[in-house]
Image 1 (tube, rainbow, N blue to C red):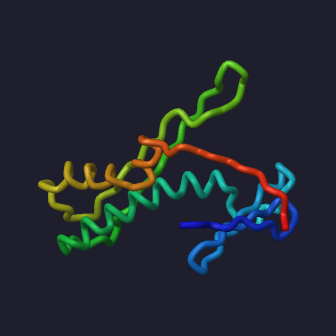
Image 2 (spheres, rainbow, N blue to C red; image 1 turned 180 degrees about the vertical axis):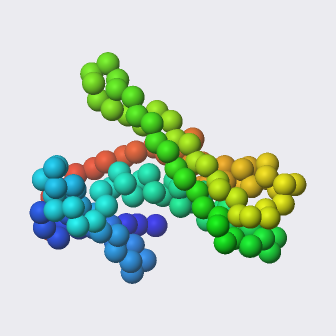
Length: 135
């Protein structure tokens, strides 16, 4: 599996994979144009949307009406000894749709915890970064 990162101008970086392009840009206050989410926003949103897909599929498989179903993700940051902020806690609240069966409350939480993005963070990969001269 491979992803190509290209730079269309300014502070923009695009991720290209499987015929799709995921555009990124930096906020104006960081020298970008703010035309797309920053890579970190995509990272945060990948956690919530991944959990969300698991929750949605759980309901769909059981034919539970999903009208009103939504997730809210809250992020907490703390400063380290050097004053640099780091993500310290991420909380996802599932707002269950009206009439959601009580017997599934614990199961839907466990289902959200199956999120693949979360699993990768909990068991991080090895990172290898190389630099080569272009042809």
